[in-house]
Each structure stands twice: as C-alpha cells, then as structure tokens.
Length: 355
Image (cartoon, rainbow, N blue to C red; front, side, top):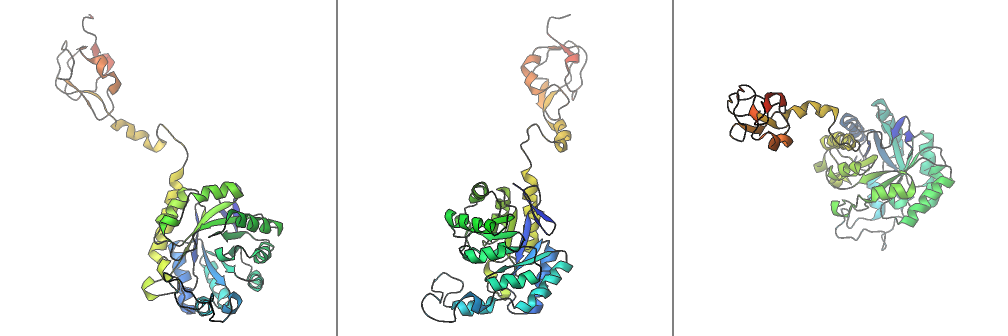
C-alpha cells in the first residue's frame, strides 16, 4: 500500500495517524470564534483543519415541502428545513483564505469539502493541498470527477455507500486522473453510536479497494478512533468545537480542545503500540529478566547437607538455577556451607553418594 503525500505529510501505516479537525458550522457564524477554533486545534496537535464549502442555495432548495424538512424525531435538527440548517452551518466563502492562512501560520494543513463544482473551482484558486468528498456526496459522480481532476489527493467518506457505489466513486476519481485516494469509513448518523460503527470494515475496505483507509468519526469521545488506528486507520477526522455547552450545529458529537489533544496523543500511542510480531522480549525488557524466579537457598546449609524444600525455594530474582531444574536438585548435597540467600548453582552441589 503506497503512502499518500499531502503537502509533504506522508499518510500510511508507517506514519503516525493524520488527524483532521473538522470545524463544520460550529463557528456559529462568528469569524473570531472560527479563528480561535483554528488556534485551539493547532495547540491540540491536529495535523489539519477542514472546512465545508457551500451555500444554502448550492446545497438545496428553499422550500418547506416534504423531504426538505427534517422529520426524524431522533435528529439533532428535527423540524428544521434543509435550507435553514445549511444557511446556519455554512462557512462564508470570504472566511476561507483567512482561516486557511491562519492554519498555515500555525503549521497545519487546511482544506475543505466542496459540495458543488463551483466550490471546487473556488478551492482550486486557494491552492488547497487536497479535496474531501462528504459521505452524502459520494454518489455525486460529476462532483467527484471535478475534484479528482485537480491534480491533488482526494479523501472520500463512504458513509452508507454500498460496495458498488464505492467502486463507482473510486473508478470515477481514477478516470479523472487521481490515483492518490483515501477512503474514510464513516457512519452517517449524528451522533453515531459505537455499536453501529463496524470498524472491522476498515481492513476489508483497504484490501478491496487498494487505498489508504481512515475513519470519519461521529461518535462521542476518542475510544472508537483509537480502536480504528489499531485496526489500520491512517487518517482520523473528528468534528471540533471550543465548548459543547456554548452550542454549534454539530456540537453534540464534536470534541473540545482537551479531548482533541487526547485524540492526538492516544491515536499516536495506539499506532506506536502495534509494532510487529515479537516473542522473547524486546531489548527494553532485557533488564527485567533478572526479576524472574530461580532456585535459592532459603535456610543456612552445612557442607554435606541434603537439599530439598526445607532449605531451598523458588523465588525472585533470577540469578540461581532456573525453576525447571527443581526436581533435579532434590536430595543433592552441598559441597560447602551455603548461607541463606545464596543463588543455587551446579558448582555448589553434587548428587548424593558422589565423593
């Protein structure tokens, strides 16, 4: 599996997970808050921030008829029209260069999810290092072709897509000239539950499509993301907010700054822990071997005394004979006086009857 290079950041299983902080609409239409979010993401250690590039009119129609109003009772946005929700969540186009420049100043990459072809053109003018296709847009093959034709890596969330739909999306991207593709396992519910995240799909997706695979995680906390890295995820995307209690359209399933910092450290720790198949201990464990068990004199012994459980014990540390010799030394005799605490050695004993 080849590494993907996004503006000098290598993404692959030999490299620490690439962490994306998704600002989404959690800026609540306040530019100063959005800037503070970028700054906090940098302090937390995120590799990149991501925006969403659309307007309410480019996303949907401004109507109240059936299908254009969210009716699901368990939705965070129940009762809202699609147009009103997207108007509230949209990041103004004029903010993009401000936020992108701030991210770059702080050492992060910055890119976005375009939701129409005009948004791709807009992002191309800003020279974004890659493009991201949202899970609900994975079946918009013309949009994928447009983004894939820009000569930059393409990240695609798979969400509720079938294998056939993912195949079509990947094929479309490749036909448009893009070979650097990252797929993100994603559960398109908001918030998502760990029980329907199905992380074992990650390895299967990697093998089936020959792509780097990560996770766009809408669950609470960092546990699912850490598990995903252990299963081979090379990219983790999480929605981000400064303060869940202060609100934001995606606040309920977004990480706060201290949680984002925990995500960065714990996913890297999980990646480091995977290592390779090793038996017999590592170099770091070598000194610990002295604290294994071995056979020691447990009571003072005179020369010629017989050895047995009354004056020998298997204890720590490991400077005496190994415990596997326990039965062999029973009824042997001491060649010399042995003080309590002496590690037993073959040179100190002989079989009974040998002179």
